[in-house]
Structure formats: C-alpha cells, structure tokens
Length: 178
Image 1 (tube, one colour):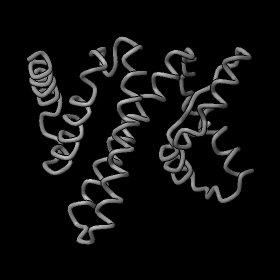
Image 2 (tube, one colour):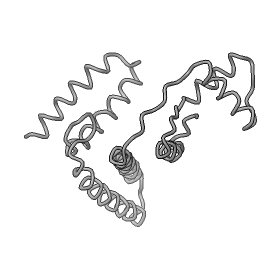
Image 3 (cartoon, one colour):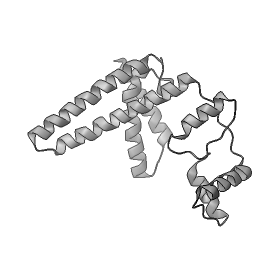
C-alpha cells in the first residue's frame, strides 16, 4: 500500500492482528514508476493496478508489526512535536500582534499548549527512553536541536549533517546534566 501521511497505520495494525504482512511504499516512487512505464493513474482502479505492478517489480519488504507500546510511544512523540510546533507558531504570532486583547488571547493559547506539553512529557517519561534511546527528559532539547539542524542543512545544502547531530546531542546531554 502507499503511505498516506499516517492513515495507513490503522490498516497495518489490523493486518498484523490477522498475521498478514504488508509493505508501505513511498507514493512518490510509485508516481515515478507510473511515469516510467508511460501510464497515468487517474482513477482508483488504475492506481490499484499500478501499485500492484510496482510491488511485483520492486518487491518492497513487509514492515515488522509494531507493538502497542511502540505505537503509543510514536503517537506521544508526534503529539509532542506538534505541540512544540504550535507553541512556536503562537509565539511568532504574539511577536507580530499589536492589539492588547489579541495578545492576551495568544498568551492564553500558549499557556494551554504548554500545559498540554507538560502533560505529554509526564506520560512520555513513563516510557523510560525517547528519541534515539535518550531519556525522555532530553526530548525537548533534542527536538529543538534537530529542528535547527534541519533548517541549517536545507539552507546550506546538507553538509556534514551526522557530525553536527552528534555535536549538538553531546551539548544537549551536557546541558541537561548541569
């Protein structure tokens, strides 16, 4: 099946319950395959046939079924990332707002989002480890580091991304231990 921005997860979970293997393929690769064979998949029927042909030719590997623990942890990490992004967006709006009532409304929204973030942090910390096996308490710092790296690497054309990740993670660990 094609990846659909997360909508495929429920189907994958149900297939795993029934011991059926499935592979998730990148939609862009399927589109490129379609162009390469000279077809135009404009209907669901044609698209299904094209995905089937792609799987026949490429033979993508089935995904290992994730445990409920892994699924829950992934959902919590995604929630945390979304909350951090929303807080950042609201802080940017606050800087641009000139009306006192609008500013207070934005401040209220930011506080609510921060409360949600604290709640998700408490739940995530019960998992013991978070991103890259680092304690969940370091996740906020690590996520911010990765955002900066993503932005920097896009701006300069990637460069030595791995080295930079390692250096920033070391600094984040040092900072968290102080």
